[in-house]
Image (cartoon, rainbow, N blue to C red):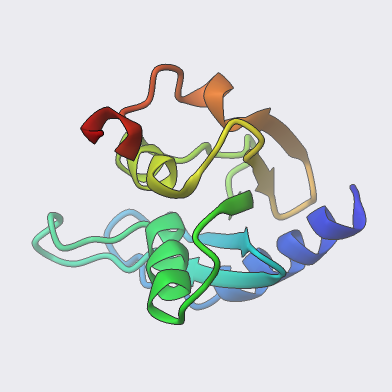
Length: 133
């Protein structure tokens, strides 16, 4: 892992412990690098299911609400599953709002098994703000 990946991994693992996942028992943490700052989020489930928010979106919404630079450099998602989980489709769309072709998505498990992708690899032909020009 690079130094940045280590920092993202540690931040995601720390926040993953705070996840509220009584229905799925899938505890997810995310760390997003925007500008020179890391923002974190965990999944927060809701009995209505539709009210559930994924860790990636929590981290991105937090970053935006705190005035972060509006370009995502890297995202790291950590789960307690043996095989690292990628962002869901809804999260990929939210990432697309702030991503560019250089944005890197890392998936990891708690043991540090990590897999990395350029954002266009996991969400080709994403609908982005450019489509609204």
